[in-house]
Figure (tube, one colour):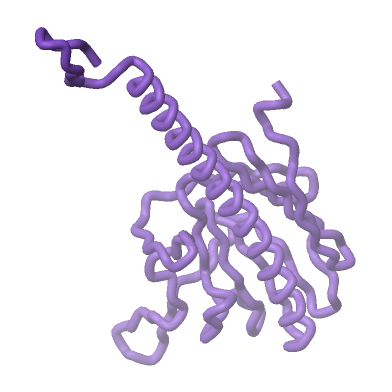
Length: 212
C-alpha cells in the first residue's frame, strides 16, 4: 500500500513477495504429494501382481490334484500360461478364465530360477490388451482357435513352447522348486518361491538400488 498525493491510502497493484513465496510453497507441496502417490501406486501394483501369481500357482496346484492330471506354469516373454498334460501331450488349459494366459505390464520384469538355472525373460513384440487392474493379456493365445487342415479331419491350436521354462505341478501335490522375481524400474522387487512339497510363498526383497 502507498499514500496518494492527497494523503489517501492506495493499494499497489500486483503480488507481494510474501504472496509469491506462499504460492511457490503450495505448488511444491502439491508436486511432492503427486510424486509420492505415483510411487506408492506402482509399489502396490507390483505387490498385487506378485500376490496374484502366487494365488494362481496355488490354484493350479490344487487343480492338478483334483483332476489327477499334471499341470505346469509356462513362463515366456514377460508373461505366463498354464498348461496341462493330456494323452502325453502338453496343451493350454481350455475354458478356464482364471488360469488364462497373462502378460505383465511393461514397467514390470520377470526373472525365474529353476534347478539352479536363471532365466531373465524379454517380452516379445506382440499385441496386448489391457484389462481391469492394469494387467495385460497375451493377444489371442486361445486354445479354442484351431487351424483347419485340408481334409478337415485333424485340427490343431496354438501349442506350448517346449523351450520355455516350466514349473511342473504334479497330481501328487509336488511341484518343481522355483524362484520368481518380479521387479520394476525403481528397483522394487518381490519374490515368489515354491518348494518341492508345494509350499508357495511371496515376500518383498530389498530394493536393488540399495544393494549398490
